[in-house]
Length: 345
Ligand code: NCD
Ligand code: ZN
Image (cartoon, rainbow, N blue to C red):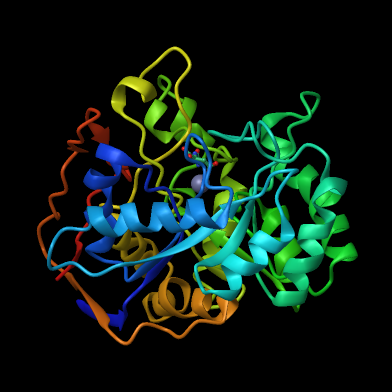
């Protein structure tokens, strides 16, 4: 097969930032994706409905003429989040999810949740109205090794939340472990997981062997090879519970190539080519549409996109820019470490 047409994909976990960075990175996503769940971890975060409405306007204003793209907005859950404000923003169709960051777990998560009891009323209301909770699933306990933080989060935080709120729809975002895959795989209702492009391609050796590679550092950090293989199996299975969330997270090179480098991989530019490569390697090109275009809308109760996207396999490697220029400085594009032959046409 050298040509593949799928329903136009969506990205169910995306960082667009704001200002000059937003302007530079938005076309990289809008070129291939119809919609994306927009992460609210700006500084200051997108906390209230009115913040999401204003951010949505800034995103639409940054969209180049002739491109279409629908930002699916989210609110950043804090211990002070007002359940009525969330319900109002969901009721008007403005927001499609609420994002839970354990305080301190990742970039701009200082306003996140420390005491999960404090957000119980919001979670209760979300379960009632069918609004999904997107979860950054890592504990922040300094005693817990960074490579174990996802697995421990499932036992300590996620499973208790789901037991208290069996009707709450939960998306465990950017899963990186076989434990994450297994936890989702044993659950029939109201739980799904997103998987990033880069976690299907790199393991922790890619970050650390032969010199430290800051552009492969993201959170949750890539784990050992057995976990990557579990993620590939889940993503390429076609199972409705796993779908694409790139977590494309731009930081300038100056902030990545730094003594205390930021977490985040920027993969918007070549994600569809990378995914076609991975799915072909797994003999699963016929399941790319489920992963990138069908399973996400199903969980969110949204229609699939009416348009399509076509990929073509060419004989010479596709040339992607190594970096994109932004008004804040260059941002390095994810390097899968091998040549890509699939190209979106
Ligand atoms: C994200 C960012 O830069 O905002 N970074 C990352 O490594 N994924 C935050 C996040 O999603 O954890
Ligand atoms: Zn993210």
